[in-house]
Image 1 (cartoon, rainbow, N blue to C red):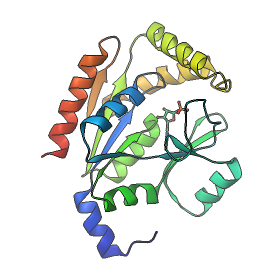
Image 2: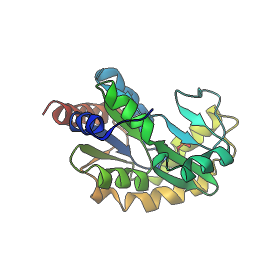
Image 3: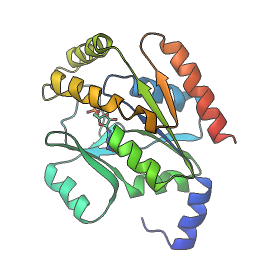
Image 4: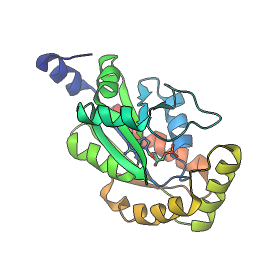
Length: 205
Ligand code: 5GP
């Protein structure tokens, strides 16, 4: 899909983006499902990844699952608005076209993205983005959630628990750079309510 400058300018004036970031296991996916079912004007940005597909995932809905070669080819063609090696040898990235396609359909974009990627998007789109950091400040809770998830996804064996936990510690240091920080230790209902309130204020202002 290609866009001429005027057309893209118009689309970008209207389109907004909501960036959900935070460590793996913080509850981003749950919050993002809650927001998508609350606001029909939101659409999930499907990222590309080179990690292997989990039992419950669908190509094109959860991620575009790509080989490393095809991911690299998209980097070379400047097709990503941002990409990161989120875990060693595992790449994740957002396609420019994914964002434009959503804005073109008069919807706002919802991202579930790692902290660096989230901050990069915020820097690129400072005027029409809302960034929310989902925080779990208890290593014990985070560990329990990650273990529960790895049981559900028996083929999730590359997801090394310690790598994810160490990354979580680092990521929490960046929370202050986000527009909002939502603590999601225990009371998921309250976190969902707060997220809905923040997003509603942003998209309806
Ligand atoms: P998972 O493998 O658990 O689905 O995701 C691992 C991490 O990659 C999560 O923190 C998720 O938010 C992040 N992620 C997903 N898509 C993207 C993306 O397009 N870009 C970046 N930078 N991170 C992403």
